[in-house]
Length: 240
Image (cartoon, rainbow, N blue to C red):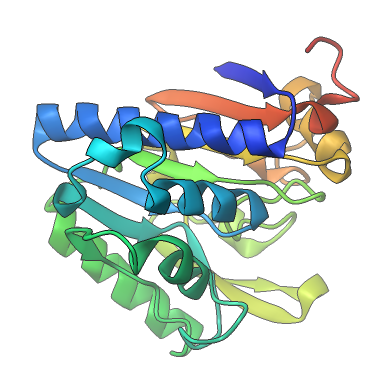
């Protein structure tokens, strides 16, 4: 596990854009494609805008070999302002010629949407446990990641790639990748910014508490695990 500390959110986003481009180029060279699960949130938004602008080495990326998926989605239509897909489309996917886009259909009943997305993953990746080249994640102040919220049923799901998850405190349901498929990724990158994440970040990185309380602790991938954080989020860490 690597923890990379950046001075502010802007510097973090620039580093994340460079990391995305590097991993994409390496994956395309080695395997002919780059399968990435995108995240929602304000920090990824800035990363996507940089990627769409051709920032630095991202300008040379062969987008036709990039295949965009999603780590989670709200149960809303694709044009809703709360849709992760809409945010990614407006900031990135409408501006670069990606090879394919695979959205979670939040307008469907959650269980149906989860089953459909799982079938789509299996169609794309083939037999066995799908292995993303990169999964981008964030955390909430409560320690959730993707839509794996504290003390929710999705944390116990080990026989599915995608599941619907009831989140009582938000009075809603979400669609999310499950822990096994996240941990099968070749690389996972957490993007974390802001003082409001400091307590959760300390518990996740340095605490010995129950992962059911801070679900991001469940993320221990077979591949690379990188935490890209800004200094504001590290205020409670023992060492930064």
